Amino acid sequence: ATRGMAMMTDDMMAIHKSVDGWKVYPGWPQVRMWPQVAQHFVKNIDSLKRVHSRFEKRIVDLREQDGISHSSKSGLLKRLYLLERLDSNGAEVVIKPVTAAESVMSLLQNSMLADAYRPLAIEESRLVKLALMLESVDVRRVVYPSGKEHLARVCESIEADVKTF
Image 1: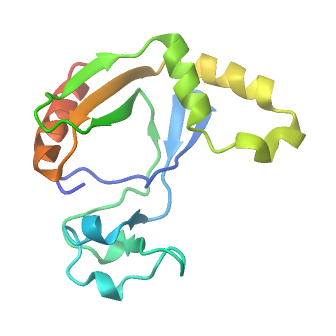
Image 2 (image 1 turned 90 degrees about the vertical axis):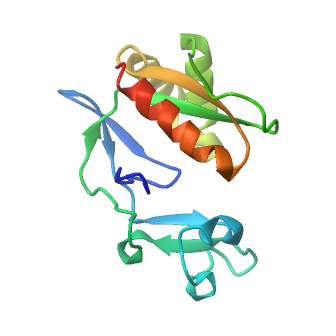
């Protein structure tokens, strides 16, 4: 977002099938950040509301931040990046394709439904929809070293990879 790309969502996104493909819909114009992360983007983190009274995590309203924009428009989903951060600071940024089986498993593991929707009996149809989505959505894994000093390189690698699509 600080590199000129508008954010659509924090950590969850709504995806629906349309005539044109799989559409991603924007979330609220906010992100939740731990104070040690927020301090890099916000001048006064103490003025930010907490996500919950028991946690230090803060809500950053993007409408109030200079240099970070939020998109209110939907867009077609063409590629998903699964992030894998390594503790090794010396590691290179590697972007590699993910197999269909790994893609389905990752999508199932990272979707919101969990046990809450089991009574609706939609698990089978959800699996079918995810498999159909993967016929037109490319999935890649980004393996990168931990540490904010590496983030520019991670961004550059993803930006370069997007251009290959």
